[in-house]
Image (tube, rainbow, N blue to C red; front, side):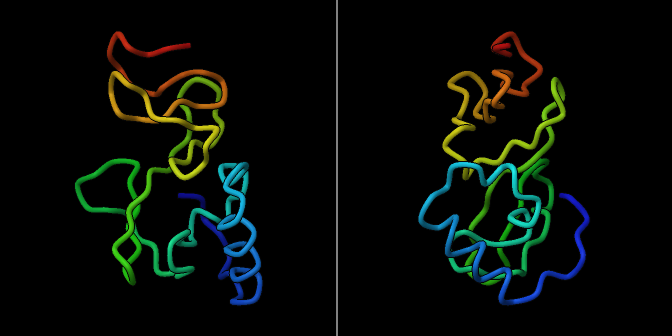
Length: 107
C-alpha cells in the first residue's frame, strides 16, 4: 500500500463520503488505500498470508489493492473499473491486464 502521511479525520470523512456514494475512481486516490469503504475506519492493515489484500481492523472488511505489473496503475477491488477476472479471481486493471500469471492474463 502507498505510504502516506497521517490522514486527518476530516479529510478521511470527506473521502469516505464521496467514494461510498460513487466508487468510480477509488483506484486513483492513494488515500483510499488507508480508508475502509464499509465503516470509514483508518485502521487498515495488510492481511497476513494474502498478497494484495488489506483488512479493516474495526469491521473485518477485506479488499484487494495492488499495482498492475503491466502498466503500473493502482488496481482496487472496490472500484467498478477493476472488475474480477473469471479465470483467476484477481482484478482487471484499467489497461486490461488481470494481473495473474496463468494463461488467463488478458491484455
